[in-house]
Length: 486
Image (cartoon, rainbow, N blue to C red; front, side, top):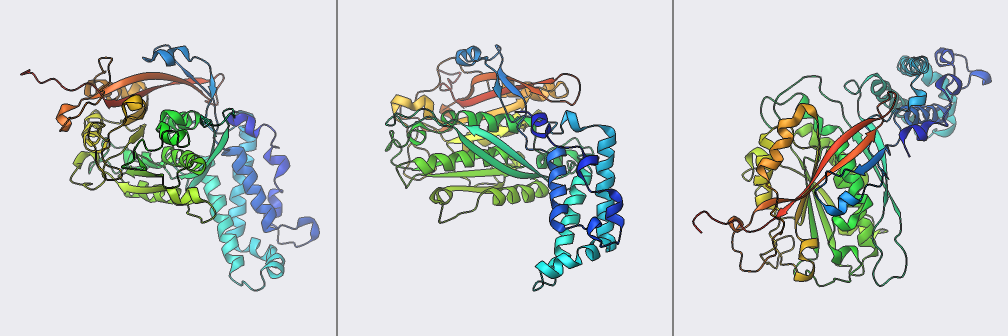
């Protein structure tokens, strides 16, 4: 379902909203009566109209994908990707202008005290014992209206805007169960914060306090694509001993904590979605000692503040939900350019994720350096949770540690996109099957195991749909490096 479908049945602002003059009137007659409840409902309506839940357009594999399975999978799928959540049918300039004027008058009326006096009877009746509640309620109304007004005026002007994402999730049923594949609904609510209007050329440097310092606080298309992929096929990301309800129980007797790292998490959409999927898997898993730890990382203070808020909004431990206590989502600062000195105690991870994180050619090198330390090596064993553990031979390729990376193929970032394939060479066709001993990281080679091209028909608000192309890389431990002396 696209964003347009979500708002197609909503009335127009001129027919739904109270008349503008009623917001400025001091009359308390029944015909002009306003209530806090009705005004909040008006704001909910405007948010649905101009900032609906992001579900979006069509996603499909391209024949250019390197995986045979993916080349054959050319069936279109519905996805959550949409860079333009505003409905085509409700972008009439007059209606939009009316909505903006209505919001502006509402804010002015609230700030001037007119609205408070109009609502006084309601406050006296419903909040007699909470004398400050009326002021707080009006301030909250002003805050919500201001954010909507700014959002409709452009993303750089917008304040903290909440977005809802909805993902159908299709995990595999337990092999011991005769039931068919079930569909679960994954819901995530997060906030974007404004883009800086100052341009910049850096990412993690003193000169990058403008645009690139704030892009992480926006939800980008690559994150939507990767989040959709995770929800659509969890088995690709979680090990079989977890996603199939304990059939492979004992596979990792030394560690029952599956660790996930997201690089450049931004608003946290990918971490939040895989966390919700993890809760669903954990909830149906027979081994109650199994746990999942997700670490969402980024760098800039403003991005980290927003990331933490989004994590707290979506994950709260509850004794009524055992799964929420066994799935842990945390945030950490991670500076790729100074790693490992800046983050020496992160441990190793079974799965690493990244979306829309290549802005400069240096980033691929920095990310490779991070992976060499943080992506678990499959050939070493340890008794510590989260450290290196040796997988069984029967499914070592499926459960081996991998880095999943999604990037948009933008014309303006051709050099940056090409840097991935320069830094991570394609595997020779036989991914590494560990045969201990394999003592050090120099014995292993980080390689591109597969590359897929995903095409998304993103709604552009123009006639027809704009097609956006994404590259989806799976990077892992390839064949051992052969030294030049051998």
